[in-house]
Length: 325
Ligand code: PMP
Image (tube, rainbow, N blue to C red; front, side):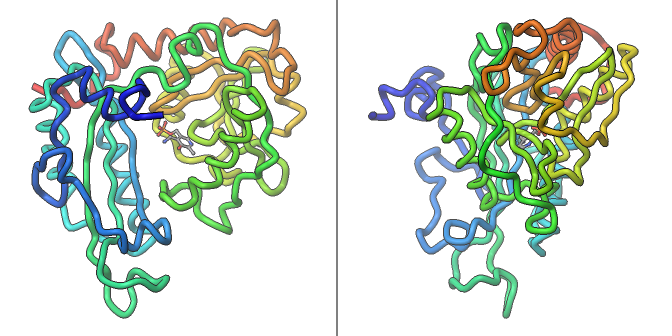
């Protein structure tokens, strides 16, 4: 399919917005077409990139980045795992992002910062005998509900993947690293081929870890559970935010839970969280209805509170926002 025919493709997005023309690359604002890298880039061969994904919401104060500082911190922490030193301070990335949103006149958007080992030689180590150049880019674009607008309302159908999430003694799951995403690629595509909207992955011990691009939450008897990071879950920023919102709404929250596969089938409610997925209810697992098979009351309450907060219909949690003046 040509990109022009694909409404999710960048060409179509650029045509639709008419303003998407700039990417920040290695300290400079460059034309969209000029944000390129060599085919012998280390990260292209060995997956040695770390990346982030944040959202900027349209609010009455103008566009506002949601928990940007936390996303930035996770990017630097992910890089540190691989001995990658970003040649820019976090403030530089923040200023670049704000300027990208302003210049391209974006009321709301998704923001993708990425740092990667670049071009000089191949060979597995990016740091020995010398550190390869570290390149950094930031791009923004409008991105609607990741799993579709209907998914937010009606919920989605998921399956437990035959692909296990890699254990944290194989690859640290707390770092958001390019290469390991092939694990999620396999799970997502398998789920899609089998007619499901998304997958849930178990870890090597058979406990629930997360979705390919989402954290998972379970509600049972009025209490909220999400797998521990040691179970293979990414330290999701939406996960952390939702734990706080749920607690502030008065629900007991267990954020270091160990959840067995069977508990997915007997949950009262299940939902995914993520920057792209936001708060997406899950209505069936492997064809078995979750509760009555539609989004439950606690999921709906947390979801509506989440959107009130991120779209700034309340002054609460003001410290979570970086407003683009
Ligand atoms: N798990 C994985 C594997 C992800 O890719 C994401 C998206 N970054 C998440 C969880 C959710 O994290 P966050 O809420 O920080 O976007």
